[in-house]
Structures are given as structure tokens and as C-alpha cells.
Image 1 (cartoon, helix red, strand yellow):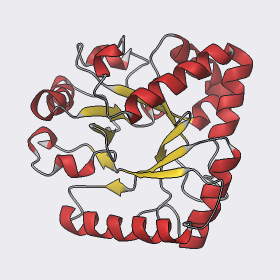
Image 2 (cartoon, one colour):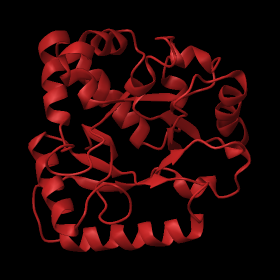
Image 3 (spheres, helix red, strand yellow):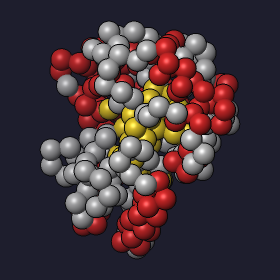
Length: 246
């Protein structure tokens, strides 16, 4: 039974700016296990303007298989799921290979949004991903867009079209952003968590620290809600209508 899932990581080796080696990937998995995380989704960066999708998919499959082989006889490590962090691009909703980037066994896709204020065209394009493909966008690291979007309720921007909002653990761990993060979580404006880990030092797996802060400040009801959303997302997103998007 899956309880806590890290929905955003760069744990695959030598595919993006994340793990530099398979040995580092294994160490990252061990650190993830110490955070009581049951499953971690490998989401390497994909940039349509710079990368050939077929080459990326082939390389991702190879790296994933290598990592699974490396930990096959290890006990106590989290399950590893496969996905991608897809950078937004014009025409993404008409992309014929979009389903290749879904989080494994789900109808969810992790999106890295533009680092400028999202206009109506961008929001309409993201909404169309669900309308055209029945793929539910997961907005990656919402904390990075707070100033850009001037703290708007980003879920409401999509006018009822289902989206999940993912926040990085650092949003809760950082003293200066913690209050905002906890308020957004309490208000139902954050659904999923991720470490966005890249290595074992400067950007290490840190979901456990965030969960401890959430438990201490908001109680176990809040962490139970995160687990519920994680389970809902991991089930494939087919029960998406059960989420009360705000």
C-alpha cells in the first residue's frame, strides 16, 4: 500500500542535470528511504525545443532499467516510478507523443511552466491537455511561480479544468516561505509534494523534513490529506473528479 510519494525527482543518472552516476542515484534512493517515502517518481527534464523525443525516451528507458538492476537485491528502498518533467512549449496540447511522458501507469504529466506571467493563451494551452488527451497536468514546483503569478490561486486560473499542484519540500523547509506554503496546503491549493532532488549534497532528497514541519504545524490531518492525494494520483488519476479543486 503506497502512502507517501515523492512526485518530482532527478534521480536517473546521466540524463539531465540530476544524478551524475548510478552510484549517486542509489545513495539518493537511500536518503529518500530515510524520509519514509514509499515511492519516488523519476522525472528527468525534457525540453521539446532542444531534444529529440524518441532519443530522450530511449535514453530514459535505458537509465531506468540500469537503476532498477542496481537496486534489485536491495531491501527497504522506495519503489521507483517513471515520468518526465516536461517544459511547457507552444502547441503542447497538440503534441502527438505527449502520452509518452505521462507518469507511469497514470494519466498525469508533470509540467514545468514558463518563468514569466502566464497569459490566457498559455493557460488555455495547458487546459487543453486534459480536454484533448484526458491527461491531467501536474504543475511542477508551484513555489517558483509565486512572485510571477503574484500569489494568485493558480488552480482557479484553469477555470475548473483539473490540475494537480506540486510543491517542493524546500517551500516548507525555508523559514521565509514556510508560512505561505502551510497556508496554501491548508487551503487545498497544494496537492502533491516532491523533493526535486538532483544530487546528494546541495539538492538532496529532503521530503522528510517538509513532512515533519507539516505534521508539527498542521497536524496529522494535513499529512493524511497529502497521502490521500498521492494515492489518488498514483491510482491513475481515474478518480480525478473526487478532488475538490479550488
